[in-house]
Amino acid sequence: MSAVDELLARARQELGPRVNPQEAAAVQEAGGLLVDIRYAQLRERDGTIPGALIVERNELEWRLDPTGEHRAPEATHHDLPVVVVCNEGYASTLAALSLRQLGLHRATDLTGGFQAWRAAGLPVRT
Image (cartoon, rainbow, N blue to C red; front, side, top):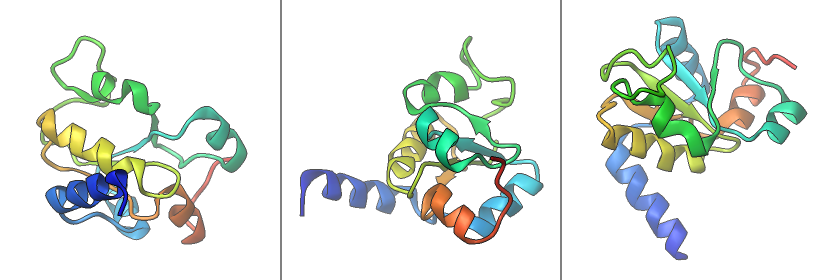
């Protein structure tokens, strides 16, 4: 097993339950935040999840920290349910764990990422 695979396995163990596409849609419907961290080329190629906040990975912590001066307006409090979405569900695990370390204790990620969302037939804006 590579070092990055070990890191991912440890992160998933620490993060706990992840959500599937239907669960992510339910989080969003209940007022939680879906955060798409994919880079622009992937969003342009495949589309986006309607209503998801677009924050590229390198800005995530600054935009989601409810106490930070650079936070997104949607990042209102530490109890906010957040589901991080990457392309296939790998980078999102590490990103969600980072948000947990900032105090967003309900942060998790979407198993299978955007590709699983799309495959589940959930809405996509092209």
